[in-house]
Length: 207
Image (cartoon, rainbow, N blue to C red; front, side, top):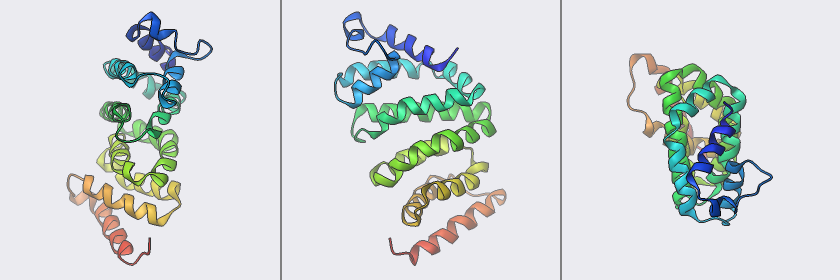
C-alpha cells in the first residue's frame, strides 16, 4: 500500500469531520495537513494528534519504505517542511522523533538498505537545514545515525562532507557526530582516525 494512502487514512481517522474540512480537498490529506501546519493555519495540537497516530503505525510504514525507494523519497518530501519549523515547536520535535523511530526500525530490519535510502533521498533534504540552522544540527545528525548503523558511519560522514560542500559547517557537524558515537572498537579504527584527522583540521580552520 502506498505510504501516502496509509498516511491519508491515519489523518482521516485522527481528525473529526470539522477539522477535515479545513484541509485542501485537492491535495492528499497528509500533504494539506503539513502545508497548513507550516503556514500556521491549523492548531499545533491537532497536528500533534495526527503525528502521534502516525508514530503508532511505524512498523507498517517501515516495511513500505524498505520495499520502495519512491516511498522513502515521498516520506521525506512530505515531512521535511515540518523540519523548517522552529526547533522549539512541539511538531518539529514530534516529526524528528518519528523519523528517528522509523530509521531505527528500518536499520534493525535491513541496515544496508536503510542507510542507502537515507543517503540517496534523506540526506539531500537535510543539507539546506544543516547549513542554515546550526541549532538544529544536533537533532538532525542524531536522526541521521538512526538510519545508519555504526559500521556505516564512515561512509555516511564522507557522503555528508560531499553534500555539504562547506568545510566550516562540516567540521561543526563532525564534532556533533563524534559525541554521538557509543565507542570505538578495533573494527572502527578507520572511523576514529577520521574523527582525529578532522579534529586536528578544525583546530587550524578559520570558520
